Length: 95
Image (tube, rainbow, N blue to C red; front, side, top):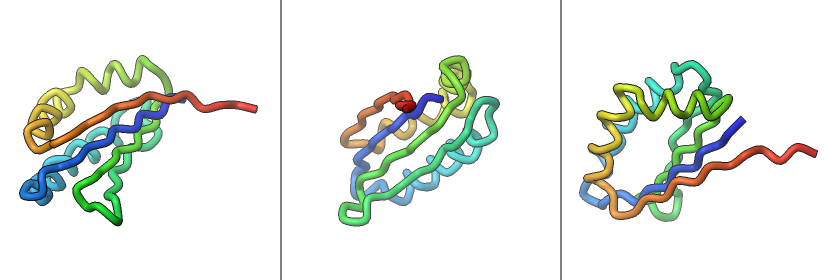
């Protein structure tokens, strides 16, 4: 399993638009083959900060997601609303 943590700081005046746009991304991504979880979180102390935590079966599922119609259409729209973004990939540590 691969976990993606996608952090974004959204322009204050764009919060409502961001939530509207990202809702479609979340809903469609959750239905993709290989998706285990895809959840948007908003920072309690700073509501401009969001993180999407995604869990995927493998890199093949991520590659397919990154080529999907909704991802290639919505992510550039989100980019215009952001002040900052950072994406990190993690593998689960098994003991």
